[in-house]
Length: 203
Image (cartoon, rainbow, N blue to C red):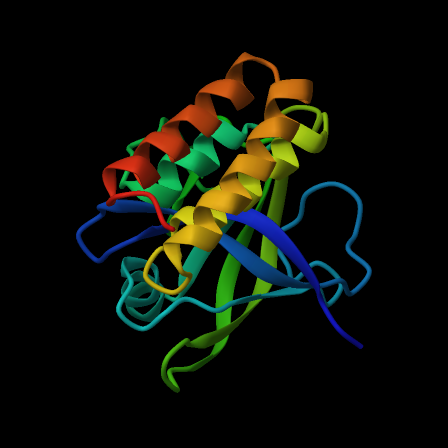
């Protein structure tokens, strides 16, 4: 059985209490999650994080054994976190040492079960030990999906030929222009400006 890959924003904390925010597609292994909130593993549900070894997320999770997976429909949060180290409003997690984004629709608090640091990406299996919901998850339309794809592209400029990036961004921009609201338009502008600053257009 293959896991569902869920785009999330992972918050972690280092030993000194400094918070890191990072967008990440996590492996979501559904084990029959219970209704409501709880403090035990949610009926076998587990989430796998796969950060690169040179990231703050990996260092923090290794140090604390905890993380929070935040689910949100605000793609501007993804856009800014993909290209910088933003400081978003947070509140303390309920069970683990960590924080929840104020803008999260819902979240899962994780406790590490196992950590495999084999390069280049770690495999961190974690149990869901608490879940919470703050507001309704409205969902993703075509523009929000397009911004998520653009955010992923912006993190891979060192891996993908620039000409290919430019072509894909142009295609995604058409979708955004047709179906976006103000937050999606701003998010796409943040990403296209970042890519433009990264170097001359591809040929």
